[in-house]
Image (cartoon, rainbow, N blue to C red; front, top):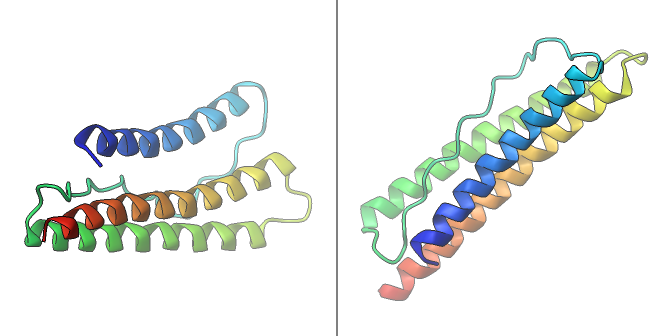
Length: 129
């Protein structure tokens, strides 16, 4: 994977988050009721993964550690969102329930995507060995 592909994946991940925000904003502008303030901490930005073709052992370890921390934060967010979904009253607007579900699913998708990026970079790193 080259530098361009790594940037592309970071842009895809950033675009997914921006898309979710845009959907929520548009739905609010068209009269969909806003969800109450989230009790879930916002997930952090995706860390930059090392480039396996040029990274040192230490950079790959740091990338792995950053990946684990990020994935754990996304799992915490997803668990919190699922708790919110379960606690929603039966008469909750379906759009709010769907948004929470979409946010929880997006967190897991982001975790899978960044893990895939790291795996590609790890293979490139090991190929140099």
